[in-house]
Length: 274
Image (cartoon, rainbow, N blue to C red):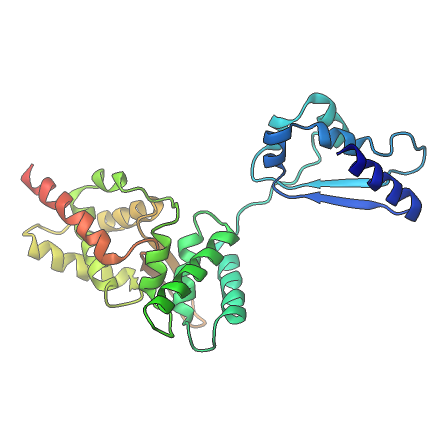
């Protein structure tokens, strides 16, 4: 490592250049080797009286100040850091759209399928995750001899990626929240999404099936929000035309609807026996 630092110093001085060095995922380096390398890099032009010749950009998904000694923090500057937030749904849809257009054949995917991919990755805000889901969905379609991606390709792939949703969360849901989810699952086995206006009708049908008196709209809205906050469903609000009208679309991007339905039905039966 000493020879490498010497070579960098010589190159900078010979070319009278200013080197901007970017270290990505630097937290892995710090865990493995400590901060000695950073300290030496920060002192690379210490014997010069002129303007500094090296600028360091450190990228990490973790708070790296916790890994650094006081001397290194002092040289870097404790306040010289910028926190970048994860991508929003809008950012993720742009990323997956660009990658799909570059990597897949025209006509092999629909915009709604790309939306589902972005929805699956939205809780993490991770661009790599949205690309991974797109790749996995394409492989699913290819393995089945199809030339077009569908929602189930996305859901099967996303189910193998860590998400905000954890199955034990289903056990804490009240009976009527489970009944509402059954209605959503059944519709999403046939459709790409279900609107908030349709949920109430679907819920009433399931209540009749299980001989339960339906709850009111306000309670149903609370159940929808709780399911969304828990990552069980994803909600997206779209504007209608040029007016102020809005409609809410609900999807299940991280799991096949039939698999979620199979997990909820035993919970309903258990709750009805109480």
